[in-house]
Amino acid sequence: MSKLYLIPTPIGNLEDITLRALRLLKQADIVLAEDTRTTKKLFSHYEIATHLAAFHMHNEHKELDKWIARLKKGESIALVSDAGTPAISDPGFLLIRECIKEGIEVDCLPGATAFVPALVNSGLPAEKFIFEGFLPVKKGRQTRLKLLAEEEKTMIFYESPHRIVKTLTQFCEYFGKERLVSISREISKMFEETKRGTMLEVLQYFDEKKPKGEFVIIVAGK
Image (tube, rainbow, N blue to C red):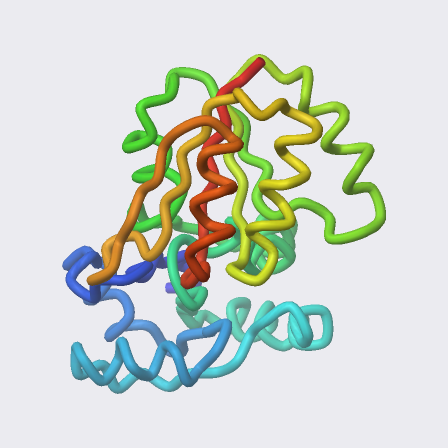
């Protein structure tokens, strides 16, 4: 039956995947992957033989019509990102929106995503929060930070290792050096780490220790 399945994949430990996700990855007519090389490692671990095709930010506009046509013919397609849930700071939104527009059923499975364990593990209020993902690298970054400085809810950001010190330096400037923050990296992996403290304390820590891995930053609201 024609359906798009959105399947979360492990963000680190390969055991963090549901039995249903594994079954659907094996049963799908094709799996669209952000990076087929990354997904092949998961497929090899679980002996999944389903054909893979690339679907990422650089080709999603061009490939969209092709996959919608395949779905309309009755095929089932599974979409995965390199890690976590598709469309959360990853490709997927365009395909999901077009499927809904065309009346094609979309089914998103529950599963791994980086910000939930980082938020819960932070010790900061989790009943209300905003997810910012990656901040703009250049245009609009300062404007966004000025607005967020007044935000009262807990804030969630993603950041890469080569920009984490710069971002924390800006957070000290806009949010204040005493604002509480929790940073988690390498979630569910061997060298998983969470560092909590004031903005200045955490900045000094990562300024002295070479940052590695993908980062989730949890910032207390004003």
